[in-house]
Image (cartoon, rainbow, N blue to C red; front, side, top):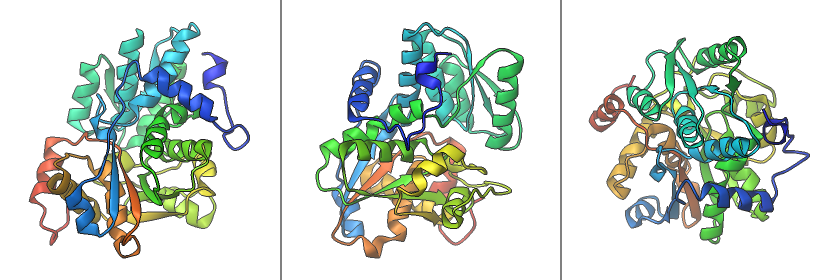
Length: 337
């Protein structure tokens, strides 16, 4: 694999420049549309603040992650890379890799945990990827993918890497360029590429917006690690927000974002469910629970946000029918497993 793109890069010592972000945005613009930044009167009225939503749920794979896949594989192809690739995923990273692999003519294999989102699995297969189910959660699938990459001479593409951060960070470049005066933004945290990309773009632009990370209280490894200033893993990550279901943080991502976020907050399953329903009613957008976690974060801090200009990143729309049915029927008085 080319060393120029996927070699180790310490973003602390070698930050992504504005020139790099603009080059990246221009490149992926040939494959992906930019996404809208919108204000929804009902949403702003509900929370008594001016809310701007970034609609990454409108991208072709229904997730922000496809930006990183297209940038990384596109640049690799420019430099002669032609090996088949493998990745571990709960769905959105896998769809990103599958989409990009099809665009640039390589075969993708994605490893998902057993019982993974069926609609995401179907989407990855439709994009041409081979989908392998292994293990009970993302971390087990990750171990399997790494082992297969060595055994079958496949190139392993992690869910967090500075090249992916550059690609996905273009959503923040668009958002911060289009919306003036943003004071604070809520960003969900899965493995960390989305929030790292936002921070990197913010710093490249010299923007002063505050960044708040949001995790599920049932998958709170990043929040616990940030609070204790050391790596903390959890025994499980059983959350309805499958895109946030990570038991062990990326060391690289954690080190990068820890000193750059103002806080990382936990939201409950009920918060996430209610946020998903609010987005559907107030914006007519179907957002997956991991994407709705950003609004759940705002909901939790609603009293502190009155009158402010607030950004909410809707990272994806890939919700399966079973989960959607649970959410629609949920009344708030019982647990949602």
